[in-house]
Amino acid sequence: MHFTSEQRLDDGVLEREFTLGEIPGILWTPASASASAPAPLILLGHPPLGLRKMYPRLVDRARHSAAEGFATATIELPGSGDRPRLPAVEQARADMRRAMEAGEPVSDEIIDALILPLVDKSVPEWQAALDALLSLPEIGGPVGYSGGVISIGIRLAVVEPRISAAVLFAGSFVPRAMFEEARQVTIPLHVLLQWDDEGNDRQAALDLFDAFGSKEKSLHANMGGHTGVPQFAGDAAAQFFTRHLK
Image (cartoon, rainbow, N blue to C red; front, side):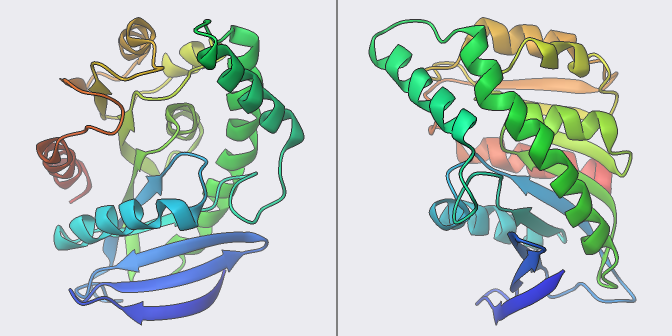
């Protein structure tokens, strides 16, 4: 991990951009974090739109988390931002758009081609980032995962024992193969669902929640579309992490 920039935000949060090999990322730490009092860490997932485009939403989430005493970090997803494109994923994304514009269902084949390569490539990168982040003296466990492509969160919850709890957003396509992985998830889960999410299969989201193997899991459904998540839903997610990570 190589830090490339550093700035102190007006609320005292330290924002540092870094690279991990070829992968860009950002780390935010609260002013209270130190080697003698390391902060718990939340990994901030996001859709594959690029860190530059997602930055305003990410920094807002990071600052709210810092106010609760959490450090947060994110990395650029494969094929996003300035990273090399993934031709098969780009083709699947174009096929998805054509189907949706034509009012047709998005086929399982398109969903698999769109999501599974992203999961396979990004999860080891998240794990490598976690290795580097937890080596910093001001960062400690336990670790949570929040938001982003839900299939990435599922895979991380299965394969990464250092993640103790997760907030997942049921707002992206889910390959059928991920339902079997969901049955292997055992950590506490807080799942957000927008009831009128355009393009999201509500029944599939409910079926996925049912499939999760966690003994502690809660589903929080709110009226509205994909971008209409109410502020209080974020507050409830913060309370969930406070219960499980502090």
